[in-house]
Amino acid sequence: MKIRLSSGFKINPPFQQDTTPIYATDLEEGVLGKANNNGTILISDKITDPEERRSVIEHEKVHLDQMKRGDLDYDDDFVYWKGKKYSRDDMKEGAQDLPWEAEAYAKTDPFEKY
Image (cartoon, rainbow, N blue to C red; front, side, top):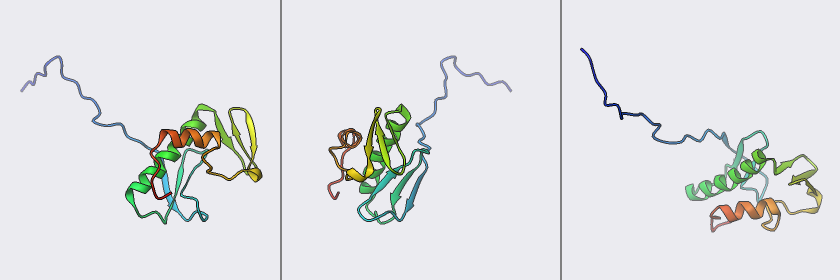
């Protein structure tokens, strides 16, 4: 038996799959999520609201993108943004006025409970 398919027949993936590893874990007080420079995201295991979880993940994905572009990096003592070095001792991490945070907050819809 022979089956003929029309010449215009194509199979396309029905979706784009996101393979970012996301782990729920106990994070320090006041921290909802972290983007790691190994491409993973940590999210607080205390988040129970699915919308809040989605919002935190989207925010952290912006940071992953910043790292992939080469704009953002960090170590234990410093955060590096577009060639400038910021001491972690002199900043409130997650503050909206930090340049890498400003971009992340601008590109995501912050959850009202933050």
